[in-house]
Image (cartoon, rainbow, N blue to C red):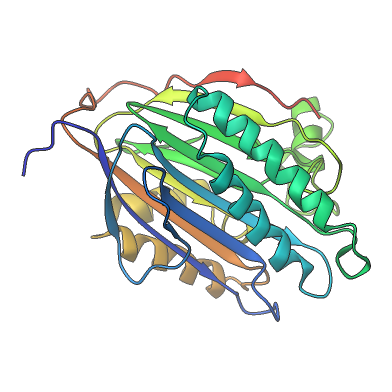
Length: 284
């Protein structure tokens, strides 16, 4: 059936992995024109991109005594509620909603049993023909366009900071003892700097959001090959999770994968690269 607008098919899953007693990861898929948000899926769903847009987000919680589960769930709940304000521009609403999520998790962390809790938060707002990518922490977002996988986020981590500065090589990064240390997270300080990028979507673009339980075990080219060759979005997500688990599964693993459709999006020319614009950068 012809679709003159913009739509997407999306599937998401989260897995506890093979070592952790609890799953502190979470994700959300939300049509911002309706009140219901999706946090668990049995199969892929199709969403029309209305005037409010569609929100995809993943969060990786941290903190003892199951506080990480609270942090990631609260971060996503706050993010979704904050996006209900349609008066602001898409990028202003997304930035403000992430900032609100940070404040809510920070306030919740004041209690003794939740002290020190926090979470990463990576969100993609699909609004018309554009995607806005917000990040705090080191959960990632990618786009697959044609046969290329392009990372849309930049890890806010000690490891990435040293790689950027040239004080650490990619060869040494694998054994770097502080590779899991992140420079900021939702709820660990009263305020955060929300890294925000945007780009124009193309028909058949595939958006991937994931926690570091995936990226710590599966290389970019492996992710690309699985996404490009899998028969369905669900099959791709489950294969990615299975591969991370086969390689140890020491962390929780969350994957959200969406494919863009509709005649409202320009067709991919076959050669065009992703032109990623920085709205606000995080400098560490």
